[in-house]
Length: 315
View 1 (cartoon, rainbow, N blue to C red):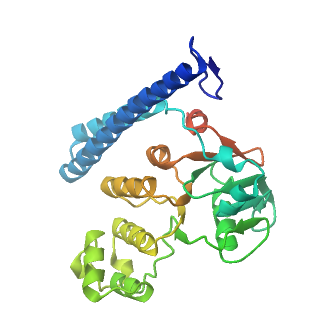
View 2 (view 1 turned 180 degrees about the horizontal axis):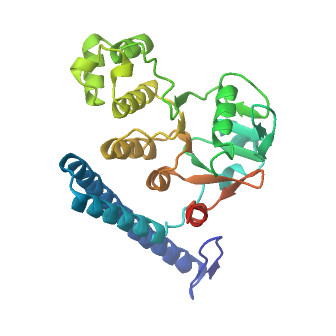
View 3 (view 1 turned 45 degrees about the horizontal axis):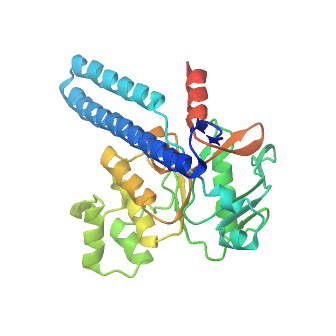
């Protein structure tokens, strides 16, 4: 029995039912191997981060070299690892059925994504995002990823047009500039304004997010980049969205914060539209991948070909 796939077809000399079971076992084994390799790479990056901090503080050239070696080893492991095949939720919503369309949080009707001066960057084609989809946008710098995110935000605010948001969509937005945080207000005041929480609950939530007591009532601009990013993630969590819009969400997060964000998104039933250059994050959270290529937005099986092309272009 032959199972045709875009990236990795499988052939089993078995009847269909037995072959299907064998395919599931093979996919599960591939997933375990891939997971172990990714964990190994993450451990190496944690070690590299620790050595980097020690090296900076001590001025040790040897530790700087060791840090680079560990990072390069992690890069090689990630480049060689092959993710297991995953059945994408896109299959169900490509059917022209009203039930599928009704479930969509976002609907794209061949929308034109353009620069502010009107130059066409690409067209989306007809696409949907339903609950549980975690869609990662892939594309070179300047291809239009942030412009698409801006168009989606406009649709969520009632802008209409070729991108439509369901009335049930509750968006949680985090951009790379952390623009959702009013830097002139304190973290405590920001939470008090947005949520019905008592003083002690706010202080406990902020402390749990890594914002120290002495920083909770001072302007947010005095927070470090990592603390601001953790505050942004706390705001997202408290908003309880069913659709995350994340533009480079890991830019200011430390390793612990990145892992917490990965776990939260991957363990949530909400949908997500994500832009990120962090390959480990993309692999950890993505279930669908849309690539901007040739003025079209195309769905691809995995991000690996895009990563390889990006590496070749940088070489």
